Length: 272
Image (cartoon, rainbow, N blue to C red):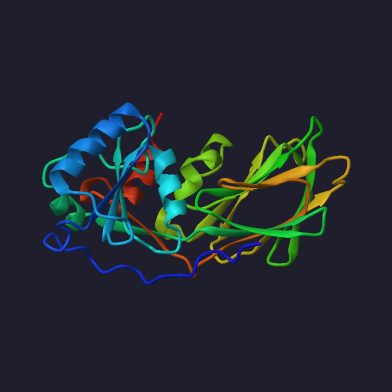
């Protein structure tokens, strides 16, 4: 069991002059990302991430999630440029005046979810999720899950393929695919969304205060085993899962002023 990384303070605003030689680059394996990496490094140099003031991630949303996990706890500002297939968390790609654009970028401050998963073997596993914590059935039979919010039972039995708790930033990922609501960053809400709910058939989930503690208890676990997943970390045959936002850890993403993350989340809700 890991306690996760220690928290670091929110970084001060970036200064264009100070950024010279202090930009670290990370790229996906995609050809377009690797070509962009070579051009940007030739133009601006490549600072070691341990010495960088800001990271520039070249790829798609998958790379952004990987980069956030890799540097989780350092609160190193990350500016993504889209060189992948999906770029909801990425800015448009451009090579000119990069230090200027980094200094002018707006910061979006995020907090991950902390998952405590209690397994059938008696062990407790701890992991952090930037997008969501999801519970998923392991076999052909639907899962049966009891849901408690802040110690109070809210749903005695959910029969489903699974259920998830999402961060606002992750509300446009798996949560959206499961027909959950998109949540603006400043709303201080966490979507709780069922995955293919069978009973209660009409339950579509809930919006919870950001400080809420969500507990899932697995019913009939031997007959209906369930796995818990926090982004990349999967724990199988769990009995109980506790989820809450961890405000001791801060993540900072940078976005161009004309296309900030809050604006993207609002715009996504009007996409048809």
